[in-house]
Image (spheres, one colour):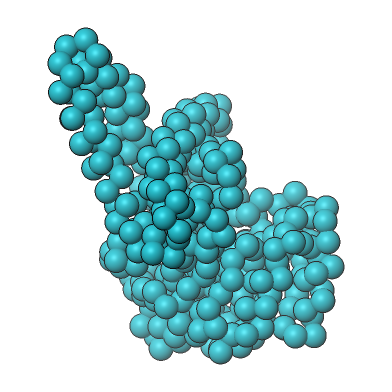
Amino acid sequence: MSVSVICTVLNEGESIRALLHTLVAQTRRPDEVVFVDGGSRDNTVAVLREYEDRLPLRVIVEPGANISRGRNVAVAAARGDIIASCDAGVRLEPQWLAELVGPIEAGAAEVTGGFFVSDPRSTFEIALGATTLPDEEDIDPQTFLPSSRSVAFTRSAWERAGKYPEWLDYCEDLIFDLRLRDEVTHFAWAPQALAHFRPRGTAKAFAKQYYRYARGDGKADLWRKRHAIRYGTYLLALPLLLGLTLFHRPWWLLALLAGVGAYCRTPYRRLAKRLPALEPREQARAVALVPLIRVVGDVAKMAGYPAGWVWRIRNWQRPEIHWRKK
């Protein structure tokens, strides 16, 4: 079976070389690599073309294409029976492609979920990765919804799942995964198909990212219960505990601190593995950053989710937004 690697890019001239180098170094060479550029204004396309003699590379320029549209264009143009998807901004382990496509080539699966890990360059990014990205031990392979920065699927599975939802600008791979779960019986889990993904470098960039993610949740009507719990926690439970602490009994502060500790327990467990690489001062900074990152992310989500729902209500007559299988 032939294998096509696909990727969408937009203004990635400064970062795309790391991905291209690691595609060149794959132990299982792709039969084809298809990049779709959404209309970059920098040198992204020029950098891609530098690798045409090192990779079986095709570059398609589709101005204005969002990520979903770019992926669909790439898959439609690809010649491979198996599609392996990655993202700009990552670097891949040499065995990434071999691990991803192995179960499909063996006939054991139609979809293989790979994995991605944090690739931090600063103390903030270390803390952010520990707070927002799962470790392998956190994954249940039976329910895992793979990111399209590390996933492989057959062309038939892509078609049966209705392709990537082009009406969504974020969370598009979650909808695609959920549709795949409806249509495909055999999923494989390949934790060694690793993509190294750099977290956002500043709190502002992180907040913007999570605002967009939550806006996508609202547009797609995802995770109602999860978002409702967040609003209840910040708008009801937290003010109540603060009020009880200030105006009733100071020992209510213990309940508040216990709640914060429970909320940050998993990030701190992940962070503990990364602390030995830091100097003591940076260790303390990373520990202090975790609850702050939680709050920034939650506030961004609480702002983004209703914005997504406003869009959904305004576009209620569009049949494609009612994507759940009847």
